[in-house]
Figure 1: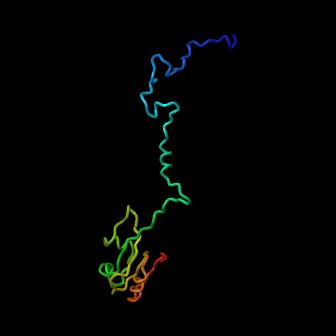
Figure 2: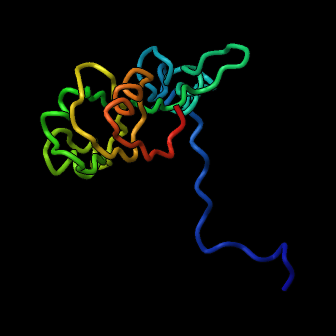
Figure 3: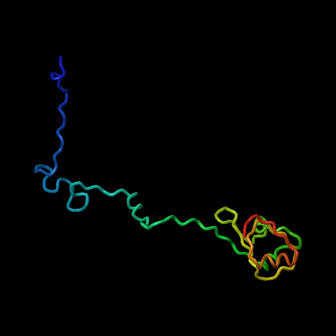
Length: 148
């Protein structure tokens, strides 16, 4: 037996030729009009639309997520804390002066509005120039690793 003598048990199904009369005439089972009815119709993938939304500008980069600070004034801290107490993010959370932002500890900046009459020890904050002057004038200390 040779290869040309072999015949299949089942006949091969002929490929459906659409749009040539017969059962699938006129619109060929594609419906009427529209992108899907046209020859060579390819629907655009979703990711291509996303690429189109990105601006075509020189040097375009995504905006960085800015570090936002919660603002605290000295007069609020003067009322909430006693003489010689340590003022930190944890102590502010404990006294419910601030709350967590999406589960994370917030960044805090202390401004010089109001007066300070107590010696306080500050940790982990960013300060304004007027706040530093007022804290040092009273005799308070600033232990901060954040550059101002």
